[in-house]
Length: 150
Image 1 (cartoon, rainbow, N blue to C red):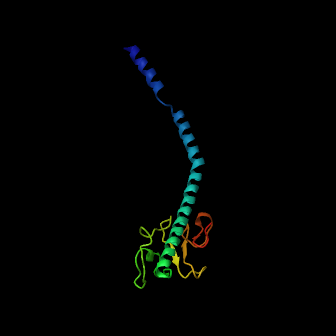
Image 2: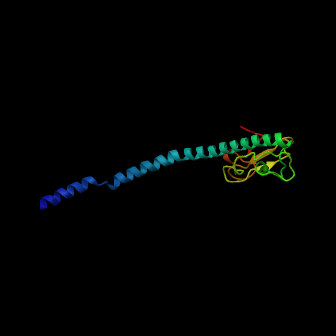
Image 3: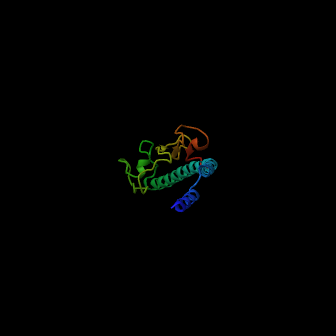
């Protein structure tokens, strides 16, 4: 009986993980997250800017088709909703020009639509205010503008 107890103690001591080993593993994982995490977040921010630019390009394509059918772009008051629902005073509307509801930008905010535009009087302007939701800014906070595709 005494022999069996000694054998069990040896096996249980060998099967476990020491506190030091656990700390080493946790430290390695922490270092990995600290080094790789910021790069992943930067990629996520860049992806949001890319998605928002693509949405603006889709709007501009749909607006071009709208103009071909109706002879003009939707007014600022009609907004981008004119691509989904016929405005009351528009003839020859042949939409909907967008397959789904008008999306928000990548930061879940409405796009700003103007026609006539402030920078291009004969073209509509679409603006996303970027990550901070404020005019201006730099990096991911910079406005994404339909007339300045980068």
